[in-house]
Image (cartoon, rainbow, N blue to C red; front, top):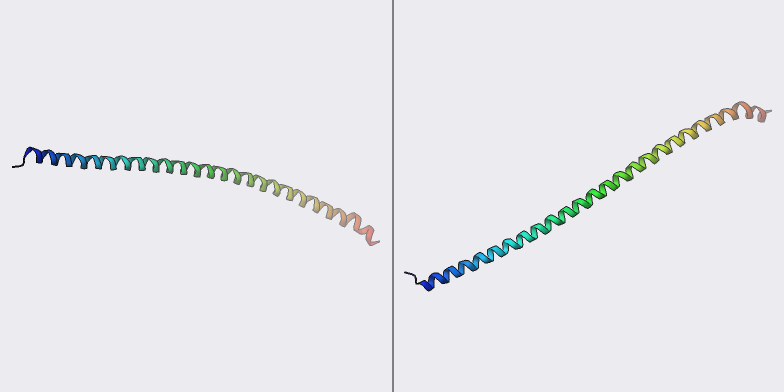
Length: 95
């Protein structure tokens, strides 16, 4: 039969192992929490960048629409000028 000292020694070893396991779990929890925080920050930055890109795309679309309207106006003016030149100025030049 084991003596009281042997039992106490084994209990001490078990307690030390349990303390080591608890320390590892605490460290794992800290690492996991740090990784979660890092992932949250990364996702947040990605969302900010996506929002910025959406704003820039919207501005580009507005600029493109405005440029298209300007080109359409210029086309109409050129068409009118071409017609005026053909009907009023060209006959004078041909004389």
